[in-house]
Image (cartoon, rainbow, N blue to C red):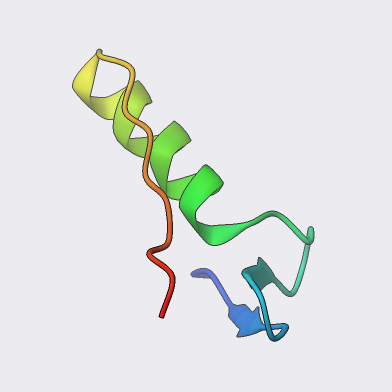
Length: 44
């Protein structure tokens, strides 16, 4: 169970389905909260 992400030098990618972390989090939060949420990684 759980989620496993690996940083590819630019983005955190799911090691099982290659989804991007912030896209996946945005989708899960939007579904749970009932409102559209969009998260993005800040540049360094």
